[in-house]
Amino acid sequence: AQRVTQPEKLLSVFKGAPVELKCNYSYSGSPELFWYVQYSRQRLQLLLRHISRESIKGFTADLNKGETSFHLKKPFAQEEDSAMYYCALEGGSEKLVFGKGTKLTVNP
Amino acid sequence: DADVTQTPRNRITKTGKRIMLECSQTKGHDRMYWYRQDPGLGLRLIYYSFDVKDINKGEISDGYSVSRQAQAKFSLSLESAIPNQTALYFCATQRAGTGAYEQFFGPGTRLTVL
Image (cartoon, rainbow over all chains, first blue to last red):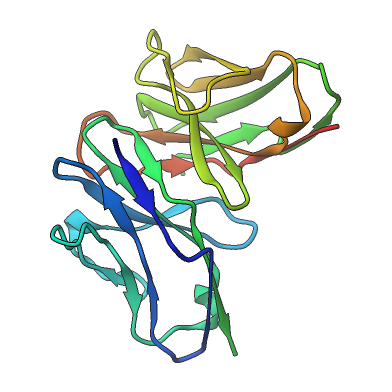
């Protein structure tokens, strides 16, 4: 079974502090992993995908197959990073399985 | 710009009513999906379609039905709405093929069932 776990419902940090949003997955094969973000009153949009190995808006995420994790990190959080973040997995079925999401609040 | 649109954006209805939510896209994608979003539960897949003649149940299809009228249109129906179907509903599209393809989401429909 494919499953994505985001253990933190809420995460609050101060501006300039590092932030890490955790994501663990369960899948027996080689997954495609994504982070989607939903800013207030906006639609869900892709933030980054592991296969691209890119940094978007200062965020990075590394796939750790040993720990089955894909944590999202940013060294210095900004107020505009406040949003709902969803980790998602695609396991060869052209369907995404989403975690329950983490609401990040960056305080001034 | 190619886009994914949903109508209506907000709808309030009563228990037992039939309601249809519509999704249109100009991205030319074959894959289309319907999700519902509930606080604390994330996004859950209701139905998905890989092309016009293909309909598949997702994780939570009970109480819902869909119709893929054309490549660009995918409608979600609630045959007899009940209060626990109150949620935010999203349509999404994706290009065909396995791989790290992005899903593009519509703006959402906020449905309230009284």
